Image (tube, rainbow, N blue to C red; front, top):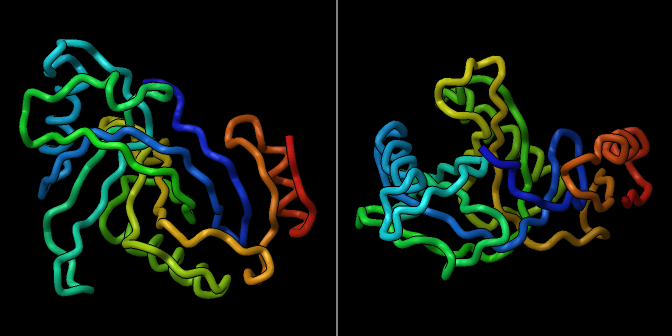
Length: 208
């Protein structure tokens, strides 16, 4: 498993973290059970593709719910995505042999995220989603789409060691319109000192 995808931390508000993600190439499958989707995608990166190439697994695994045409109803079908290795574009990614898998490029976007640990059971995910929505409401930030789950460890990892996040795409941040938010810019790797200052001071810029 390779390093996680890179992003910039652009602001914080309470337990919420705001990030700017680059464009990502995703291998995605629709499924009703996590196990089935994971098996299909895992086989794909292990060489069950048109070139027979193996691809490193890049956390997180992203799970999204599909919203029905009559919003806000949500269907039982979800999508699961594996992130393709950083630095590779769509042309460099092998086509899947299984027609249920689609490989697409997701444009860069801004995301609000909240962390939690454990097995990411439905009630745990729902609680984190509720906390995320409430934090956005207090910060007066509008989500763009439905929240999604990001899991950073494989299914066999013990619950106490798992890191999970619920995220949602948001409109581009406007500093003057957000209440109680600390702003700064840093890469998520090696930025703990910067984040501590952000949480403590809740005001100053913080750059590497």
